[in-house]
Image 1 (spheres, rainbow, N blue to C red):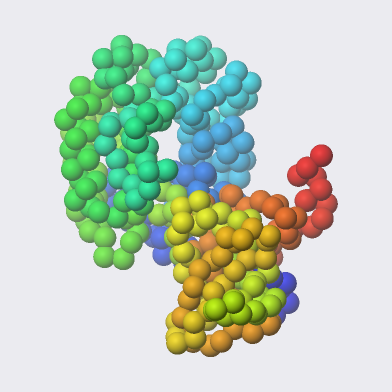
Image 2 (cartoon, rainbow, N blue to C red):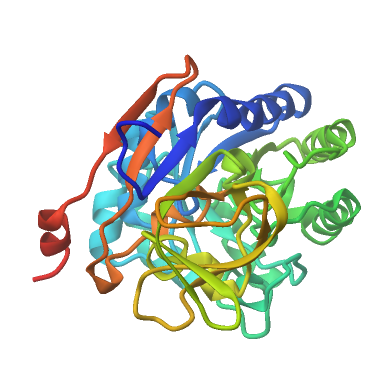
Amino acid sequence: MKGLTTPYYLIDESRLLKNLQIIQHVRESSGAKSVLALKCFSSWCVFGLMREYLDGTTSSSLFEARLGREEFGKEVHAYSVGFSASDIEAVREFADKVIFNSISQLTRHQNEVRGLKLGLRVNPGISYSHFDLADPARQYSRLGVTDTQKLAQVAPLLSGLMFHFNCENDDFENISTAIDHIGHHYGFLLEKMEWVSLGGGLFFTKPGYPLDRFCEKLKQFSDRFDVQVYLEPGETAITDSAELVTTVLDVLHNEIDIAIVDASVEAHMLDHLIYHTTPRVAFPEPGPHRMMIAGRTCLAGDVFGEYGLSIPLEVGSEVRIADAAGYTMVKKNWFNGLSMPSIVVRRLDGTLEQVRQFDYQDFKRSLS
């Protein structure tokens, strides 16, 4: 795009709004509140729009909790797999709810967060994930409490429970069965609680998802136990709302034509490397020209993928990698000292705003 230097992440507020309106429908129809999962997306340049459709933020660290308080400005849920004493001292200034991962953390720190609403993460022993790496209920999982008897013993200390056990679950029947499972096995605890979080990883903004049935299920669950239900949308809120815009620097041939762009999977879309997945190309469109698109780090496997494109790529061609918001900008890094992509927002009125650029001093300050 004219006037902008690649690489850059392009967040489109119009696309983002489509997801937010679905979340708003679920909030209004089911009564469930939604808090944005900052571990997935923390680009606060669009929080002004997002806060109109969400009830707050949920965090996985002190810094995320602080960002939620300072930049989102609504309800803050502070969770961590392990709080340090200094974390707790600081986070109590930012959080409305503090959610512990274990009973030992709860009992160790409860007095330091007295006056806040306390929660505990529960591992229900069931989950939905395409990847073992992201499965919260995998063998030997450290995520959440499994012993219901011990849960019952500490229930008087709690105002709520969190069940985060899904990853990209777009199967309504599966989540419906899981909600029934939670009601059956933990109902005696839920009846003593004010709120319950069903976590994130629920892909209810997917086209064709049975929203009315989903909303009715959430409402029935809430009414049955007289609890406020929370959802923690991450990718659900921002899916397909951003692209990584790149330029081809070189084209070479080694059995296949290979276009090298001015960005990197390793540095700028790390999740695809971790999970061995292939990102979709938003531009050029699909077609007969077979090419590999690769990053420019020295990592041999820094490859976006092999694609059939409508045009052959050449030096100077623009390539846009789709779905570059969730678990992407939060994981970008300085590997090889590559230029960090700028962050650009297409606002609702169509104007482009470059909200952040990175330079050598940012790179230098990240080291020592």
